[in-house]
Length: 341
Ligand code: TYM
Image (cartoon, rainbow, N blue to C red):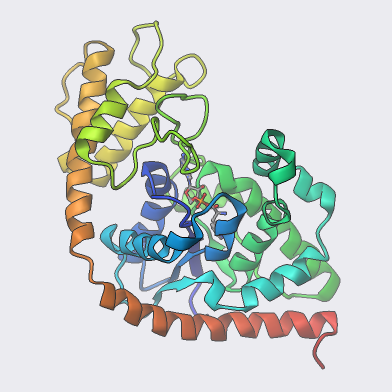
């Protein structure tokens, strides 16, 4: 790990959507394309995290493969020797470090995690211990490689803060064990943002767009047909104020549509709508639907061209190297806690 590391992972529980794309995928791929000389890029599949939510075990392998194809279609340069793709479960150190970190983590700390609280509220009995301590596994994912920067959407910032806390806690007790990831504000600045990103559900813009949404009505998946996405956008929930301006409190639906438009315009000048005044919500929705359709067409034609063999070859190289890097951190920790001489 001679270069500083930028790292992130996206679960393969369901198809990825534009929230995942803009919140985590694009920021790391942008760095892999522009700053690859300076950084090691780790874009992995947190496959062990899959079981923290409902998952179809029979199709998980295909879902993992599909996520990897999405990484490549989104522009991840696999031919760069400092860009790595890997599956968490192929690197045993993730699970092993998690157990050690678990033993230095308070129950109260985990109970306070918003994601856990939200999900636990819904169905206490079916909430697994895995969901309860998954921020610890996430901390292990990050600390094993000494990552400085971790692009994530707003919903994961609490877990990032926990990663910093547990790293500092163990560093205090055992000396300099872990590299502490940069503070969240610094991360936002690094990725050119002032705050974390949270794309909202189109049908209910008071909650985030989420892959675990059962209906998928308010979620634009990267593999949606342009017609399906148009339908979702045209029926998006708005308000009765008839004013097109960002106002997250009073107009979350309109603000969300404007955000999506602005994010797409950042990706490519092809996705910039003509600078014409938008008269009314129907025109705004049409502009968003048109822009999203162009984006999805482009993205899906790249997805079709992805070569699976290139992915398998890269996995083999990356997983070997990542095992070496992760094992070296784990050994340091094992020695510090008295498990190794
Ligand atoms: P996951 O798989 O739920 O989501 C993947 C990434 O997408 C971001 N995201 C969003 N961003 C903006 N708007 C949205 N509506 C939206 N929905 C999701 C998430 O914040 C995330 O960055 N625990 C993580 C995966 C993980 C991980 C890690 C990430 C495991 N280990 C280590 C970074 C580092 C998760 O469940 O993300």
